[in-house]
Length: 363
Image 1 (spheres, rainbow, N blue to C red):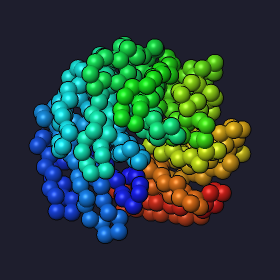
Image 2 (image 1 turned 30 degrees about the vertical axis):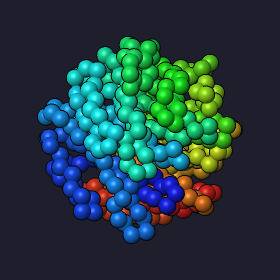
Image 3 (image 1 turned 90 degrees about the vertical axis):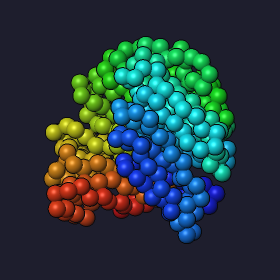
């Protein structure tokens, strides 16, 4: 979801049929398809909706993130086999191999026309998780690269880039029109990927998950054999600047990332069965969390835990929003969950939650 210039933009996925304010989209297949829409928030009316359609029974596609600027709406995601971007300016696209996913990047005009549709992939598993706007008008795309070498060619991004160790983190910078500017691989011997990305003053900041270890410029972070988390600070051109570890068993994939220029506010959860120390805060075992990390000093300004009696069913902060005086986070939980002084109980099924946090971390 994104807001810009009086409009609301949202993206999602569906099976079967989807009716959005009188326009019906039909999934022609048994796998998931994606859509993106522009909505007038004053009355909830649909301005336009566009579909990314699958074409065979064995493929799917998913939009993982969107960003909107004065140059248009940008979206990134992943797909396999053949998909089609329906509507004016759209085209079909086939993954490099049928057995592995490619990442995709697209740009849509304010009127709903596809202005760029590109892919990134090779002989392995590749995808984009996040997109963020940079002050100079460029876009940062982050995700995972599992190919030994990404393919080059028309409407391709990242040609020539390849994994260094296992599956590695991926950063690609493109222009506002979608032209490739630069790319960087963030290596480690296990499974690494970047999840969310945002500009923070004179830096570019991304959240990451890695196993075993992660190499970032002259720094090397060490975690457990399962997963560890990190916030990575780059220059705006994509050069490594500083890495901030987040526990030894943190998983940041579910947590969104927002920044006001001096701090990164994000969420995730800990898979460990031990107490975890973030700054001066001890978090309960297997707890979801949201916290604020100062990007200059590397210190935690505040941390809150979302503690559940059924941690396998708790997902912290799937999405977040930075307002004028604080943050709004959303997520889901199961059974009994405690957030600060607040307790919630469900009937054993997943329920959603949202909560506001002041810019100073107050609930």
